[in-house]
Image (cartoon, rainbow, N blue to C red; front, side, top):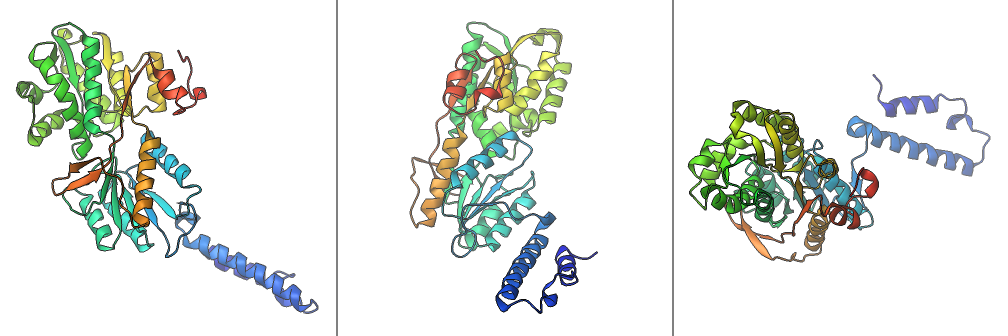
Length: 404
């Protein structure tokens, strides 16, 4: 099959009105047509060289020396990361930097290949949200070897000193906010069924979220307010206020959703099938994020022995905000990605200008203490959804129905 460029070249030169037939035209006419021809040929060659016939996804102006900022996000399959992509593009629209955004689709190998591709194009700063915190160390080290600065975005890259900055929300505070909501709603009850769910065991944030939740829930488990119904590991460790990472790993291994909707729903259904009728009734559910919360809520909602449920979430996704309005999800933790994305771009620009981004704390990644500036989080439920989500401009009102 002929390439688009070759087809264009042959077709143009064999057209009756092509350049070689213009003997009677003056020189300026020939030069003008030749210039147009060359521009068109170059355009076709560029298009043919791009995968799928599409140009790279870049934003902003091309800086000196090629690409300046490369961004690698974990997947296009979760609304959260498409939302972050949009925030980055909005922030960089008028910035005098060149940027390319790639997705790794849940593959650490693709993630590393993406980073290497961006480095080949000259990226001076790499922003990575790792799929697997430990596996992402190889990508970070490749960036460090190439002389690029590495910003770990939202999730921490583990086990390497090749991380220059961490832009994140206070992940422990997220878990604490979720657990505080459950404690507030349970009131003075005793023996309330508690179902625990967590994110992916490969994601350091899943441990931080669970650590925060355990800080608040553990005293209420010990005093009998809550009774764990779906984790023998958590039940065995209920008397420990502080868990080691290995102990948390034991629990998360039993309750992981892997940040996957189907995994979350299947696990919830399996838990409900195994549970006795007396283990249901009015239940309380720690769900790690909005996507898994909706999947888990759907499973509990159709169980005839579940009278009511209180369920947590995070990210303030449009679908979950609607679930909250409709009474299908109890709360979400708003992590304003406008602020987070701005912090990441501000840090990238600081590095490009030879400066150091601001630091308010550090996070240990099992190798070094990484400088960081965590962003505050907000608890949102039906009582404040309009003020926190709509009035703040986070999402427009026309995305929802039945607003209070």
